[in-house]
Length: 111
Image 1 (spheres, rainbow, N blue to C red):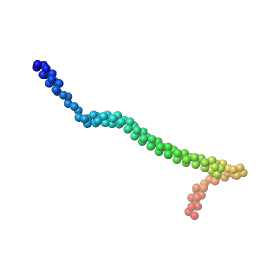
Image 2 (cartoon, rainbow, N blue to C red):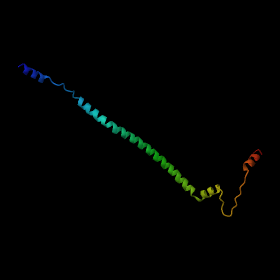
Image 3 (cartoon, rainbow, N blue to C red):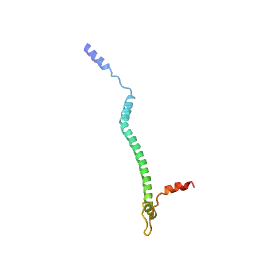
């Protein structure tokens, strides 16, 4: 009968149960661990999107400036001003090149 008593003693030895709060804590820990990467990726993507939006706003402003400059440059007055700047004259006009104006201004500045 000694063998039977040892078996019942073994049966009476119970495993120690984990506390009830441990399972929810473990589940929350695993879920939190699994969400870290997607959340950081989301935040990085959001920051990149904000940067791109700022870049788009800058480019739109630059495009508006260039479009306005193009409109001014294609007007006849601006075209005539640019042509005169590089030495073109209108038909019937004569081009005179005057040299030494800087020296003349210096000589007559004291005056």
